[in-house]
Length: 443
Image (cartoon, rainbow, N blue to C red; front, side, top):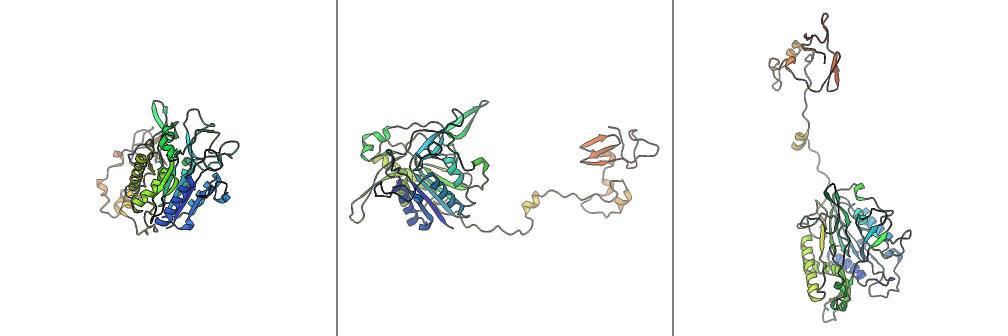
């Protein structure tokens, strides 16, 4: 069993509207996974566009930069290396947004997407985004018995895993519905979300450098251009996946200054972090780095309530946990732990009771001469306990034949044609018995 992780942080240093805590989130989560959750250093990849604590002008190696190509390549490589029984972790800190597909139909809804650090460079004149549908196709293409965990510290990332996999059994909020012949049907696209500006513009929020993690709606021609195979076209085993989203539809994911108490008389450490990433690490610590996915969700929500009461009174974000159905069990499965050893299938020791029950009944062939009406041949056959004696069988004239196609001088039973023998002075259709004992009529 191997545990692998991909942690992504996008601060967008070359943009005037960049973030300050996304890269800190990626390194905080990666450190937590390696120190406390059993992830080896060589199996944890961190993509970042700045170095923590360094100037923005210090360039990051191109291979470690969270561009669109690097994100998808690293994600696909991690999934390809996965074997049954492994554990995968994926986190993204940065901007999320809604995308209006200009190649689609009018008023069909908006797709959810994340922004890589090179989104301004674009493709074919459009902005470059990664739709959550593409991330879904990669993450849920893992082998059987692989546990996938995702932490999306951004806005508009509620449809990553399963829109119906919620604790109360309802669909995630904000889905676009359409009417067909008087019936309501939903899609995976969303309605337009509205964010409350007072959440990050009030005085208390400004004092802790609070920033939202969403961008306005972008209009892009075919945002999934050159996309990966779509979900309906992919054949995969049922996956085990969990996702913690920073905010629901219409809520605002935030980042702010977080204070870590000093150790051994040292000064407290103040760093910018996303609210979800910070609460995720703190919740694991409170749970002693153990517990179920449901326990972690409850503890994350408690940590968010503490931040709201002390620093951001107008904060409206609540953690949303979604999971893939039907194999994911959030109340019993342990966080970032394998589901159990995967062994070879049990050897076949013969027919089981179930296989014998499902097998079709075998009807023995009739005795020689039975169809021809030769009573001597039937009588010469040894009597068995499971075959009634000849005298108890009904005469051929009393039998009712189904699925019979009548033709001139012949009939067909279940695809086999039979031509009746004729008497010398009788013709078919006169109502007289033939040599086989059957009454033959023209149909």
